[in-house]
Image (cartoon, rainbow, N blue to C red; front, side, top):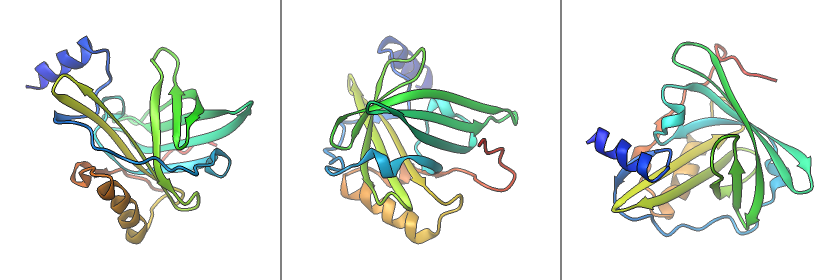
Length: 182
């Protein structure tokens, strides 16, 4: 089955995340999203499985203002081999709560901010249908390296309210042993 799903994704030119049979839920982006207070470092607290992050921990994203409405995106993590891995790209706000993110060598992808308070949590999601399969990407980002349970519960409620199954989330290790880049 995994070989079949990999072949489907390869044929559809997708990088797979959580793949299952179904349709994408109807979700709502944050209508009053403002990229300026969103800038800075966010720690990945929870995520759905994503091929491009397989086995990584200590993942964080640093967003910066590049001017002219362009946001710099720098994702940094630690591989299963202990190496620092990173990718740098750009994002542009294309609709309220929706950014188009571009990394070198990859097609642009939508980055839907479902909700954020800019100070403690952000809920990011994307879903795409390939035939009768859906490919979902979801992240709970937090400003704190190790957020409290109330923050995670608040974020999970946002996903659940949007019809997204939070049981697909798994925690991402963050800690003093992580090689955070300045």
